[in-house]
Length: 109
Image (cartoon, rainbow, N blue to C red; front, side, top):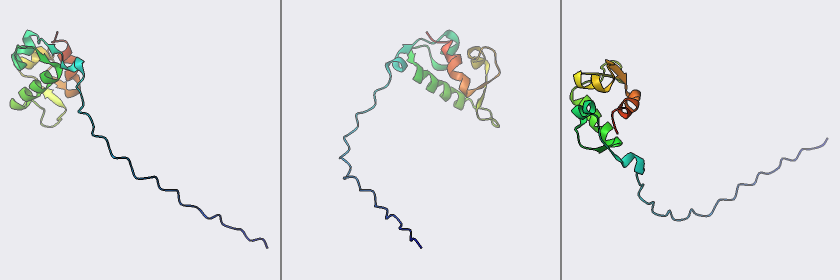
């Protein structure tokens, strides 16, 4: 009878201690996002009339939505428009939060 020899598995050599992590540089925002945009009259009623970066416009819009309790109670992804937001949303009474960027894009220059 032939006996089978089991190959002894060698443990993988451990890598040398990791190099000391270099301090990460602070992340720079994309210049395109930081460009100040002028809101249209309809959007200015909600976020103000001074030029703001796109990111700040979205933040101000969410502040307005939460302050006026316009987020749908059951379907939290939806936003119910009031008189000011109806103009921004193009007449839609309910808008998904994922549509906000597209709708805001039509009201900034």
